[in-house]
Length: 168
Length: 168
Length: 168
Image (cartoon, helix red, strand yellow):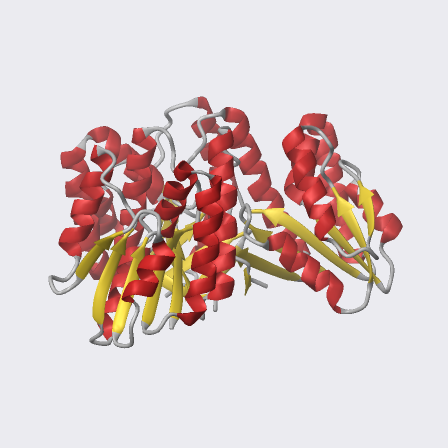
């Protein structure tokens, strides 16, 4: 069962996904796409990690997400990927070939993965058009990725102020 | 029947509107508000146009939208306007007199148009307050325009990640 | 009865809250968190005030919101706070001690207030990540505040283009 959880910054989307992950007594594997790049990110990662149950395993995978999901997905497992927006950002830094390849691999892999798959992603396209061309590119790619994943997933939820709206 | 389709950048709002337009075997006229101003816009317009069915007519109208809709609306026709945010941007460049006049004309015309009218518009007010006063002005005007059109239209849909939420 | 009304800039959230406030013949007290800081704000405040019914009382409270609500809340009263995002901005300028204290006071006070309490707040986390660290801090704090208040309130509504979606 694949489930995409969308929301803004500090919308409670990660917490909502973590609640879903913990619900059914599944064996939870947390797939972190963040890399320990800068101080602000390290603080966020550390704070997030402290909030997660002790029994969860954490895997760090900044790029090869499809392969990681294929390796660990299994009946009775819940893979929680947090978050796809950071993964997209990592792919954009890695270059267009990697981006196209990894994105395509994820879309192809999703419908065939056993167990429960929870994907957390940011909605970033509801503000004013950014001045910066790179930010515009990122916004466009993030929107397209969310559309593609929403089409591929069985369930889609939009979280605002910690409260879920079911879109699919 | 008037229908406003709102959404963020790359939210799938245009594609959703195009699906609705193609549904009932109506004669579709695509009303483009974009002008061929810069390279980035030309690429977007060209890419969008290639996605549309061959049988659709395209009209370009950057400013006098109400008059264009009144000229072409007819029973059995579907007018698809994409998008109102770009039209607002064109009006703001044309000056306050044109802006007030054209906005009022559209609001007055909408309830009386025959056939099907689909209006695509961007939601731009859900990010941080922009530093730039012009961007703040645009954001305010876009929000007011969306409110006015939502009040005037029979149906309103919010699209996120390609999925529709009915607001009205 | 506590009710949080969320929405973007110019989304119609204030107007929606004002409609709710005027509905039941309650004695309405409008709690403005804005301070007459700059010209743009003065114009907004003046325009907003002109739109409100003559019978409503207005109280200005930039910081000590919980104490103000506790002083004026009563059966038969409706307190309309517009808006919490400006209050948060005032608190951030006042420093972290005031911020933590006042935020905690509000969360503790809310479930015990008599009468009707309407809180208007901005959703600011659905755009691209801001370059400016202060803007990122504000966005994070605003998101956390909205989550905390949504958890504490009995009803939560998200307003887009003047149209309400019930989240809780």
